[in-house]
Length: 494
Ligand SMILES: [Ca+2]
Ligand SMILES: [Ca+2]
Image (cartoon, rainbow, N blue to C red; front, top):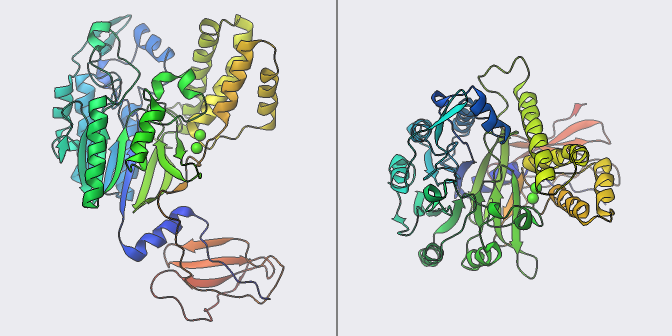
């Protein structure tokens, strides 16, 4: 029996590109999350600014140049539109919003639509201040009405319909594709409380509005995706218990309602982590994906690119690796990873002492373990080393309940829930249909004759490594009609 080569490209995005080229029925978009744009004219030095940075993990001084690099990446890929999933600004300062909108206008000027939604930092924020030495001074912030006005060109002005109860809206950036922008932030009482509410919820009236839109979409034959700031599904087991403000209130009921009404993909941010999780039906089939994108001011600065075809999506993540900024000669990724790690160390040690009641020496010993876990979780596709697992198992076996709880949390942070986070193929509909483009037989059985397959995007031909012959061979055209066998063979010694 001859070995039949199965021509499956190694990259899912390539597979998808092939599939969509065949039908032409597709949309492409990019997602950026939590850019936390900061107008540096409001101050970047002094005791008060340093104190702000110390209790945070955002690269505020660099936010503008990172955004600029991300925009360049997006312009190269030329998607149909871009989703920005909230926390557009550091703390809702009017001038930060205005400057951020200016950058979005650059994208629209190249024909790429931009759709935004608010995050918990963007509206009615009493922390909108300027920094001067040890002093902070309140600066203008924006109301819900002003937010919609500033972003008129980026969703609100072009909406098919706006929800009367929130800053949610419905847009159709590509014919046949409805995009629901969901405002899940709770900014109504911010000024009275003196602090921006971190948690999120889909107001009952807004949930009804969304469910009605999903019914209408089905009737009109529109495909629907949604985006919002807060997660609608946990991104690790127990996230809602440990960080309730990062998943919407009553997330299980709400996500089930959305899934039952036919929503299949929701794009989110807020936790600064790049992760994808799913709800599943009783027979294990995915019903709703929460595609969370990491922050543009937190290492490793992901920008997601999504190719959508009916109920299937290829998700690909790129990272900002270069910025125009003086990093003291240190490569930007290294500089940024160190900034994140040092920030997380401080936050972890403080939290372990104040919220978990650990003595200073124990908190100092555990802080690096926590910082490692969050750094890995933020990047996505987290895989613990044997050493890390041993350490976590030690915590889980400890008789002290607080230590056991910390062990559980670290274990959960390191456990990547399905599907994979950075490069994946989301199939929300019927099973994928693969069409055989052609076959080629080497005439060799039970040897390594098809070890690595790859596609040459320039020629649209597929090549395969024949390990047995120590050569690259096979040249299968991936465009046009299926080839007539036998295929032309190009053999090159390795
Ligand atoms: Ca995952
Ligand atoms: Ca993950």
